[in-house]
Image 1 (cartoon, rainbow over the protein chains, first blue to last red):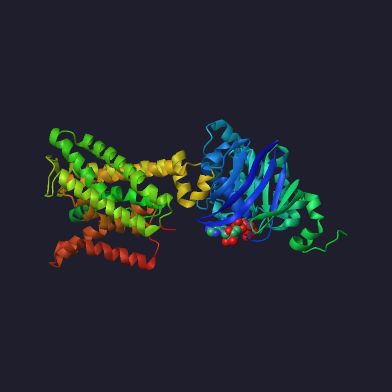
Image 2: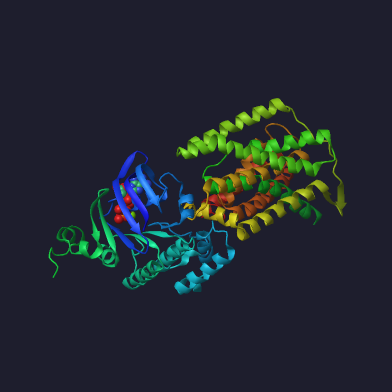
Length: 241
Length: 290
Ligand SMILES: Nc1ncnc2c1ncn2[C@@H]1O[C@H](COP(=O)(O)OP(=O)(O)OP(=O)(O)O)[C@@H](O)[C@H]1O
Ligand SMILES: [Mg+2]
């Protein structure tokens, strides 16, 4: 079942159109990657889905409900977790407060407390620093915190904007592994990545964005072996050795 | 010794007014990112509505405070809904928002002048005066200091221990992230506009009870209140607490100094601003500004 669908979505800022008609689908329990060069509109697509950028036309459906015109906090409350590319933590607030803010709209106190402990179990490096200000964490820990914050809202779909950027390879692999675990729990994940190879290798399905349009889509492995993609976005030889 | 204590007490009184009046400015600046000059008029409005109540029943000073609290909060919420929210939604920048707040201030001030009076009014209240070994104290001053300090303590607990308090801190650091954490920005912002203006109204009642009530009253203390807000670090509540009392102290030390040198105490504000400028030279973002 598709839990997040966009149809001919046109998104931008003010009067500028950046994303020009993109249609994607994220299934339950699937990791879907969106790749593309710098400035191709990947972040704008996610901001548009969340209601943080201007939606000119097209539709967004979440579990068959049209959410195109809803404000960001309502979209979040429905079950879409979002980790922005930049400024994705509350720097001066503690790790614990950051995580609690992810569960801000939830009414079940016991459940929130349970999930908080679970996040600390999944990410022990956060548990150790629970009372530290978030801005004192390392780059990798910040990404974990940002993801943890989004998970605290118990989302059905998770939108991640370059969670692996600037991370040491070891940390990046750790986060990818956590994402696969999260997927096993039935969440749909929409992953935006600069690292095309890493993203498509781990994704069930992928979309390639260029200048605001979707120029290619397909199964992760299929896209990886596509000669033109390999040449244009991966800097690899055309043929798979 | 008594002179010194009197000086400290006077500083506490001045500082408490600045603290009550400045809290709203700091809070709403922290979330809405523009200085709302109409706060001056909300201070005055608090003074006037309590005055009307006291005309009818002179015993109800505390009810007057409550009335000022509610009325000013409500007027502030209305002003946000009718004037500022439409501008913010159209992504108005700092200057239009500031000018709108000055314009709104004029409208409120002239309305109040017409409804109540353009000349000085006084509250029909007499405060118990104490003489503690030479230290002159009135019950009004004690109430003012107690109210300001408890308000500061309650706000501190509110920010640290409640969900809405956490949301306010979240919005102040990262409004976009706050929205995608499920926080209804408009609701929380409206709440802070209510709370801040309500406290400004309380400040107005105390000021009117201590001195006189006139339509320019709020405007006349807005400048030092702004100085306290800037000195503390714009948007920093804890900075404001320190800065309010520091400015109160500077002003009252200034008065003693001016009297000693035979200069007019009219210059007391100049001394407060001297402190402000000196601090800003060394700490451009204020005492606790980020
Ligand atoms: N707030 C904004 N206002 C106006 N234009 C913007 C804004 N944010 C981004 N843009 C423009 O939109 C285009 C796409 O930007 P976007 O951030 O979506 O690209 P991206 O694919 O995420 O790039 P990157 O890989 O560098 O993160 C760029 O040309 C950028 O200049
Ligand atoms: Mg981006």
